[in-house]
Structures are given as structure tokens and as C-alpha cells.
Amino acid sequence: MLNGLIYLMFFVPLTGVCSLFAVVGSLVDSSGAFAHRCALFWSRVGLMMAGVRLEVVGTENVPAGQSVIFMGNHQGNFDILVLSRAIPRRFSWLAKEELFRIPLFGPAMRRAGYIPIDRSDGRKALRSLDAAAKRIRAGASVIVFPEGTRTADGSLLPFKKGGFILAERAGVPVVPFTINGSMRVNPRNTVKLFRGTIGVRFGAPIATSGEGALTGGDLMERVRTAIESGLEG
Image (tube, helix red, strand yellow):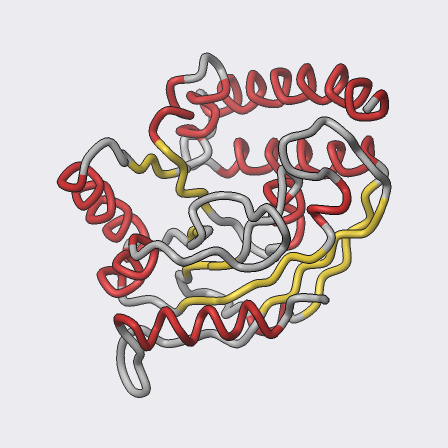
């Protein structure tokens, strides 16, 4: 537990400083590129401080020059850091709207082009998905955790439909990914921290429009199978 507490003593200020730089830098660079570079720096230093090594497989499956939706499992707090380093292109996060209200951190997320999702009721959630789909069709790539929360034992939880509705409305490929080792590095609901390796594996893109497209339950099942196939026992 002591390792985790010491880590937080340095990581929380690091997050604040990087958020401040992202907000200030975006006053000059409104494209969000500078804010994204701040996020990459934040994730690199955060992993180094924790003694976490990253292993990435399958980056050749990530299409270049095309918007995609990345979907994968959610094992722990370090998933955000490792995906920031593992994905070989600029992307945006879909995040619950409440996070955008956090002082400094929230504005930094907006400056980086991250997309808020209002889950307070069904109609607001659908409007949020429509807005997100519009952003994706305009060129943004995003990350979705279809489980909606972190797993307690490493197995996949039931998937929520929102990400798949978004994929169909945006009409872009889904790139499945699997994270292994995040739960061992930082177990759920604890500040305990262990050095180790976290792996990210990208699977082949799954079309949601055009020839061979999948939708609805078929799309969800294909994505789930792709993620499960990469899970380590």
C-alpha cells in the first residue's frame, strides 16, 4: 500500500501540471494537438513512475487515415495510461460528463477534444451519442469500454449497447483491443501498486458499414469474441 500512496503523492501533482499546460497551450493551439501531446507525456511519466512496462501487439491492425472506434476490456486504473501510449495515432476519449466539471482537469479534456457523454437519462444519452457520432464522422477516433466499468476478476462483464449504437451511427470500423496485466499492477478498489508488465493487443477491424458490415447483436458478439480471444488465463 505504501508504494501506491507514494505514487499518488507524485502522480496527482503531475496530472495537475499537465492539465494546466494543456489548457494554457490550447490558447495558442486550438486544434487540440498540443493538449494531446501533454496527455502522452502524462501517460509516459505516469507509467515510468509506477515501474510499469508496456507491451503492444497488433498495431498493424489499426487503419491509418480513417476514423475508428477502439473497443476493449477495462481491467484497472492504469488502462487509461497504457492506451494513451499504445494507440499509434491521435484519438479522443468518451467520458462521463461529470469528469468535465472537475476544475482544470475538465477544461484540459475539452481542449484535447475529448467527448462528454451525459448518462443522466436515456434521451440525453442518445443526444450525446448523436453528437459523438458527428465528431467521429468528421475525423475523430474514440475509445469505448463496452463493459462500462472495471472488472472485478478479469472476466468480461456484460456489454452495454451505447458504444455499438455509436459505431452504427458513425459508420466507422471497430478495432477491438485486449488489455492484460492492468489488474495485477493495481487491483481494483485499492491503492496497492505492483511493478509489472501490461500488454495491449489490437485485433482486426470490424466493419459497421459497406460490404460485410455487422450491426446489432452480431456486431456486439463479434467484438466480444475478439476481445475474449486475447485474454490471458
